[in-house]
Image (cartoon, rainbow, N blue to C red):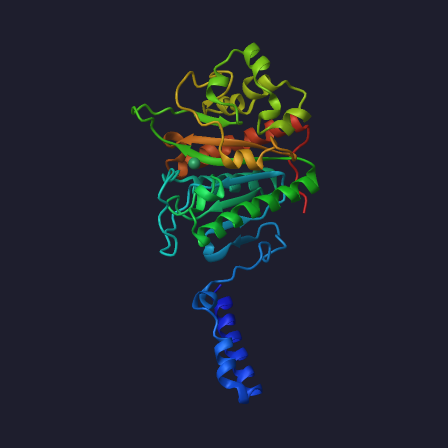
Length: 337
Ligand SMILES: [Zn+2]
């Protein structure tokens, strides 16, 4: 971006010199016209989103000032981590409202899952990571709350979602449909209780999950879920998909990571639960498209703690994604470039 600033400065100098040299007789007037307002000269001009395309599999793309990281993939899976960043640049003031807590180690955990998928699937998921600390940008809120009127934070927000959109378009073009996982972490409840289960967000609220199967069928419209497209293509019913034996939660539970919802824990039973945020809503299939989204809220103990727990979880997660994908989309996860 420095280049643009320098370019503008030279453009200004060039225009001034050119005008003066051409119109010596009217020098005072020309100089006056050529003086641009200070903020016009110094305001950084951002390149158009997509200026760094095409996105080649296995290559990494960084947005402005390395605030956003996109590792381009070739399988129908997208992973994002909006709350795991650590950068605190001075040019972006701290956000003054909303949640600012970092989801510790979700940046690292997401990369370990990516590596696990590369080894197991023989192809790479699309991975989009926010490297800014949540005090500077919340990439899982609408742009107003996310960036709080700072243009550099807003630029990073736009890049984060642009890269996800590019990945979605490529997957829809190459595979027809795919899965998006927004990776988060939850901490202890305000009363000190720490729920050690992983919460799965499909935009189905905790009190809806606490209904019986029949009540859920009668009261909750499957098309309001972030996995609407998956439900449409699956042979299984919505409730079965949410918490039956073929649900993501039950499959991950079977590999040692207890989940809500799953056949063991149908709902949160009134306790704190996150059903999916902005990214799950905007990038899932509730409002159209063929990419289904699940928000993953992992506790720190046993999952986000250290490289040993990241690896263990990544292995189980990778197995679950391929099994779930095959069961409901009836294909293996293959790579297409
Ligand atoms: Zn989060």
